[in-house]
Length: 275
Image (cartoon, helix red, strand yellow):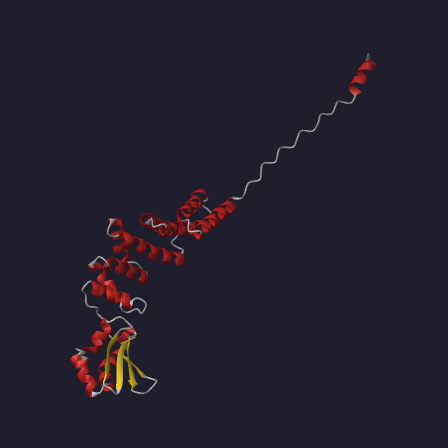
C-alpha cells in the first residue's frame, strides 16, 4: 500500500501545453502619416483643379488630426480652394478662421488677408458682412491690406476709402491704382510733391536724325519743358490747349506712361511723357 502511494507521488505530472502567445495587434498607420496622406491628396486635387474635392480633403485633415503640424497649411489651402471654387463667402470665413487660429503664420497670413479682401470685394454689394469686413480692413496693420480694401470700396464709391487711397499715392506699387480710384470717385488726388518718383520725359527728334534726344526732368521742373520748344511749337501747344503753367498738375493726375502732348514744327518733334 505504501509502495503504491510512493509510486503515485513520484510519477511525473503531465505537462500542460504552453499558452498561446497573445495575438499581435494589427499595425496601424501613424496618425501623422495619415495626415500627410490627406495633405498630399488635397494638393494633388488642387493641381488637378478639383477645388471642391481638395477643400474636403483639407477639411478632413483639420477635423481628424487637429494636432498635426500640417493643420495651419491645411486651413490656408482649404480657404484658397474654396476661393478658387468661387465660394466667396465660405472662403472669406475660412481665411478668417485661419488668421484667428494661426496668427504666427506671417507669410501665409499676409496672403490670407489680401485674398480675404478680394473675396469680400466680390461680395460687397450682396453680402453686408463682406462690406463690413472691407471697412474693418481699412484699419489693418499692413498698409497693402488697407489699400486693397480701399480699392475695393472705391468700386461702390464708399467715401470711407478716400483717406487710405490718398495715403496710397505715396507708394510706387499702388500710386496709379489709387489715383485712378480717386478720380473715378470724383475726388482730386492730393499729392504733396514730386515724391511719387514721377518724371517728365522729353524726347526731341530732329528731322533727319535717327536718334532722339531724351531728357528726364523731375516733376518739380515741369515748367522747364518749355525751354525745349520752339516758338512754333509753343503756338501749337497753345492751340491744342496745352497749359505749360499747369503741366505739373496734368502730370500728377495722369497715369504713368501717358503722353501729355507731341508737337512738330517741321524741323523737330518734341513729345512729353509721364514716367
